[in-house]
Length: 86
Length: 369
Image (cartoon, each protein chain N blue to C red):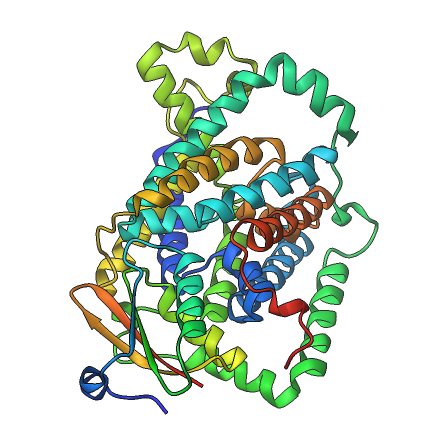
């Protein structure tokens, strides 16, 4: 299920990945590495200014059932990509 | 030949449209292959396949209708340089993070990293020009060349529509067998109806629709103006800058650069260079409209990749020759055999960096489901 921006803002992330200044494929690699470290059910948030990551990360985790994609919050020109480890 | 102002306007319009559309779909050839082999994501690859299909049909229709001739197709010498240039370009664009077109549209989005990549790619173009005569030409290109004129399957004594229609039919049959006819129809519907309130303010357009539009626009450009290309014009822009700094003699005395300006009345910016510059403008406008423009500073740790990848892309694009856009659209669309080899080389290059330098997962080759 996907959440609204308000619902996502209320979630407390278990892991925050700073990917500002990174481009592909490092944005995706950082998300995958973050998910590896997380436990099932934990929320991983990647903060990025790379627009394409908002497409590639959700597509990659959905495709491979790594995590549930919860949604994206846009804040100060950055994207906060919310993922829940399966 | 002297160019008239109307061809510059036409080039600016084409460039603007390419840049606008590439940004709207975040169309990146590196990602199309890398995401497939790494995480089995075929979203961008589907766009590339639609682009190939649209270009093939566009070129076929243009030739069949008599709007263009086989002699106008972009063919280059066929040989080992196509494969080696393709591999090196694939490595360079994966290291730097963006292909020939991806670099340009991201420049328009405010990525400082890709301005560095672009500057280094032009430096790589010029480096090749100064190594060309005699080293690269006599000791590398000549021994590796199999056919100096290049070859296009459109030269075969068939209707120009036969091969494109056959290839696109095979693509469609394969897609239907893999996904089912219903899913393909749904895909068509999604591609055409993925709109929110204002399309111009929408950050992302469906990549398949954008790919089809790019193929149509490139076909119109083929008929009205020229084959779409990026790195050749970028090399000429580099030549113009050199002439401004060091005087025109540096360009005229260089065999390679002199050849690039052979059709020009003088050293300067021509229509194709205008097209490339307006790709950045189109991407900038698209990004501003959707709120995607931001001055983005790269991490210092990534700068060696931007510099090294850019330089390698610049050298390799002259060796192959051409970047992903010229070889995918004008090359494969024109059934030019050298471009097929270049694209295979690029895929090998992308795989090398993905697997052995970035050490990403390679799920395409894993048996887990």
